[in-house]
Length: 262
Image 1 (cartoon, helix red, strand yellow):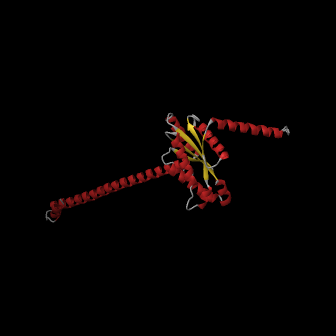
Image 2 (cartoon, rainbow, N blue to C red):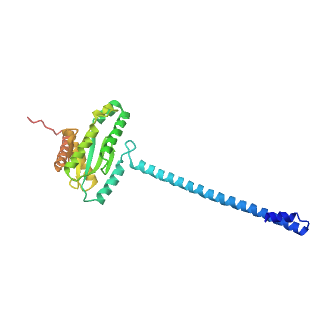
Image 3 (cartoon, rainbow, N blue to C red):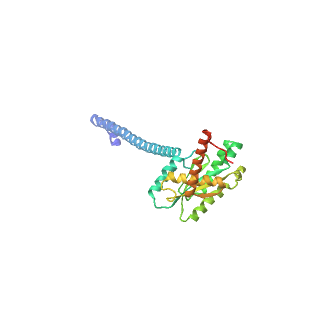
């Protein structure tokens, strides 16, 4: 249309000349309109892509933030194992969802750790705890849950088919913890004592299992550190008798009712 309109503007006929000018004007308007439309479409596509990228970036940040919140609320900041709250939550769910599956709770208490903290300081002690946690994780990679219960105590929820397998696994944990480390020569000072409680034989709920495993560990420490001990009812009775005796002795001393008998 533009070439024909241009030729009309060259005509000596005023009418044709006006038509040519109108044609060129219309062509210019159409070109400008097309350019604006193309620019608008281009910007719209660009803006849409930018929005998609921004949305993806926001979703990634939200996902990362959610993972960070979960990590902070469920893991021990020093060892990266589960913390007490997360362990209780996950383990209770496991016991509820699988009531007939055999489980065992291992209560791991470090031997010699206090000596490291007192003699070398808490900074070194923290390094040792990190190393111990890593070793426990490596040995327990097939087990359900492990956590730092507090201080130098760790809990492990293990599955097993035979008791011999359970004892073998507990001994592997002991050996891993007690092994020397090429970086931290003071690791040779650290060993562990493990108390074991079996579900549901030694407790049908998690709190009872923890108390039973703790009792087994406590009695083993008194007899010989660096070994494992499986809970039995006689340990509980013995612990109760010792507690009652200590209470009665304390009352007798307070009331000055002790008598020396020859």
